[in-house]
Image (cartoon, rainbow, N blue to C red; front, side):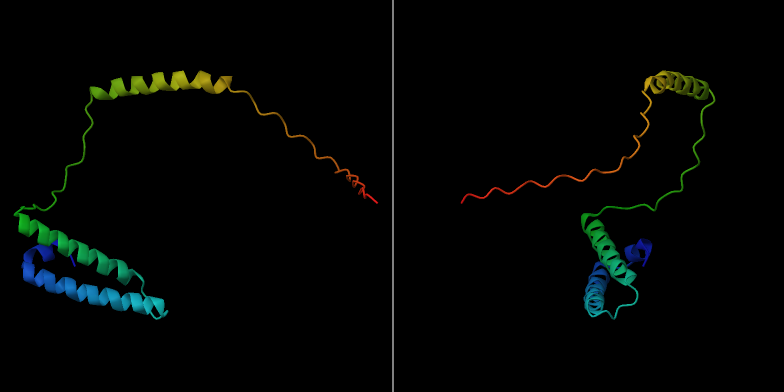
Length: 127
């Protein structure tokens, strides 16, 4: 259920819906434990619905007015800032380049040699 639909309902309706979703959640958990639940996404959907309804109840109780999210306009880069940003990037790249060149190269891996059998230790017994 969408949050906008929940905001249109009264607090009593939301509380009744929460009770229903909690019952559904319990049955989903039981079905999950007995390996009869085919769609496990129902559990997370029920939890999400409960949480959203509780949030709307708190908003209504505190008197907050929540405006719907506005779609923001795409960000436009300023033309004046672009050359300065490019200059900073090239300066950073120049600083990093010598550091990479100074890094020592890895030594080649040693060839594996045949393992020599170890001599067994003689057991000492006291008689």
